[in-house]
Image (cartoon, rainbow, N blue to C red; front, top):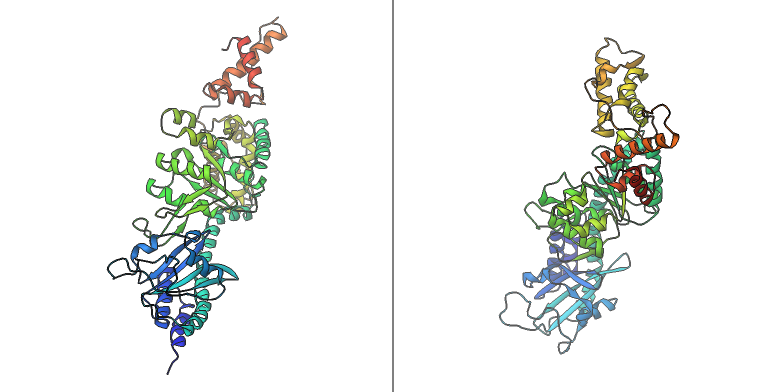
Length: 517
């Protein structure tokens, strides 16, 4: 005749090699336990901080799974945790039982009279515990304590199998998020290099190095396509968190109903389609950096919850009342004027101030002068390798056209334009040439208006009257530069001062003297 202990353990051993949902794995565990040790109720609880969270129960009311048992408030559970082996409480023990009145199918508030429990250790660390309860004060004996001790070892293996599967799932999610960055790093970008030599670009790199070494939250602003994501990656690489993940979320690319789940995660059944629990971007970025692209697109309700996480470091998954602590640095980016969004009531002022601890503006391509040629060369080399060409170049007319263009789509527009020009140029040759030259016509920029704004570091013709003093000519030139910068930055003096590398107070005095304000 098969021993009862063996009958209970054999199915659990078989389950270890099966791919099962956590709730089904734990249900089978408790069913086997009740087969081994008949009882009115059993429960599996996981220790999270100082709270025991029920993961699976049998014989207890369904609401038990929603309860959270603070260890300090439940002396029986605390005693079970403190003992290395199984614990049985005397039938006349006066300590309150956490399951009193919760035994399913019985009327009234009947108290549990026989209580047995055992801690579960996973890799020598207390993971949680198993409890058994009966209304019969003589249900359990010494043999049951011995059987429970043997059962607890396999229960711990069951829990470890579930934890390992969950960890693999989390690791897969991490790798999925980081795959694009690692792929780019291995594919020729060094890694996702910021290319440029213009004065404004050099100032940007200096600021990246400065803020990268700090723990400050950064708000990156700039036009669409100017490279805000690359700047975020560069800040992360400069930070002490560089060896931890950089997780990105495009806040504009998700439906409003999914943004909260993507940020904070969700539990199984939190909403229609949530067939399993899932970690959010905050948890995936633990110890590292979370990049919120197009943060100005966040709905107001989600803004409030994001603010709470930034203030307290605590988050709740959608559908859960359990809080998790997260250690994440935030880098946000937007092409909107968030200050104006605040005034219009579309963005929370308190969140704006939380995000803009260090505002960092990425200059548009039209302000970067001949950097456009450096970037064009970079994209040409990418296309050369992709197309299997020996050499790929721009003729002088094409270069001149690139420098004179206004680039409303910035670096992204340049990248796409170069790729199209290469394909068009190839199509004009019946045989693949050894050296493919991109002509100006292939760029399709002939009808575009040239840049009208002056570029920092470039010459701009300034009319000087014959006999005009040096001071008058300098004043005139300064006025031209300031006026044009004000137009580019829509009257924002702080941005003008930053572009011209002038202290804002000094700029204000100079502008007043020149009659600009």
